[in-house]
Amino acid sequence: VSALLHFEDFPVGRKFECGLYEVTKEEIFEFAGQFDPQPHHLDEEAAKHSLLGGLSASGWHVCAITMRMFADEIILKTANRGGAGAREARWMKPVRPGDILRLDVEVVDAKPSQSKPIGFVTFDCRVFNQREQVALVSMTPIIAKRSAP
Amino acid sequence: VSPQYWDDVEIGMRRELGSYTFTEDEIIAFARKYDPQSFHIDPVAAKQSMFGGIIASGWHTAAIWMKLAIEGRKRDKDSGRAGPLRSGVSPGFEDMKWLKPVRPGVTLSYTSEVVDKAELHSRPQLGLIKSLNEARDGSGELVMSFVGKGFISRRPKGDAG
Image (cartoon, rainbow over all chains, first blue to last red; front, side):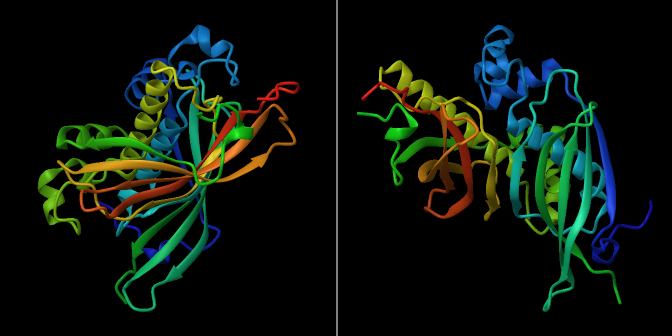
């Protein structure tokens, strides 16, 4: 088992590539049926006439998939004290059945706590599809333990 | 009269979206797919964690907001009340905060309040609204909040309302 990542492993400017994640039509239907049952996520014919011009994944589904890619590559490899939200997320392009997503993240802020052996790291997150279009951008903070001095 | 167009929506309008009780099975099923941290998926490891037990992924708590919001819109439609003509499309959200852990058996009540609205120069047939969306537990404590954004149809020209 390799050593866990700590606060010191996240200097501003460090980049990570996460993914890939293939989004199937079945998974789009499953998530939308459970959490976001709107026609443009569930009904191919109705979706054609919607603002997005075809079937697309729920934006919340895209957030969840982004979390999965982020967890597999960063969170689960970090001495992590939890996250507490997301500062901002923007859905830039619809995610379509068959899309293969990749998540590029870059550390844009890293501040040690003044009182505890932890630090606050903020990642700029960009989800790309296989056409190199940005589907989602977000700013995501995590709390990481500092390595022992 | 319920507001139908963006033009009729007023800042301060507030809706109760209903409540939802989280079960351990659902919490684990969601997290195994999308947020497999041990305190979301493994009851034994969760006990040893800083949370002292299984808690729901914050994204699960947020997804339930969407579910209840859609159900509310459907109830309006079925009862003949004309809710806002939503496009169903959102450009995103701001300030997603997970403030308290959501444990199995917890019931959260969700609300949505309009806090801002803006015209869209790029899409004059639509307007933007921002809503403060909240989930509170049985003792009224704030558990989750975020500012959502949505596109709503504007009143067609020539329709005096």
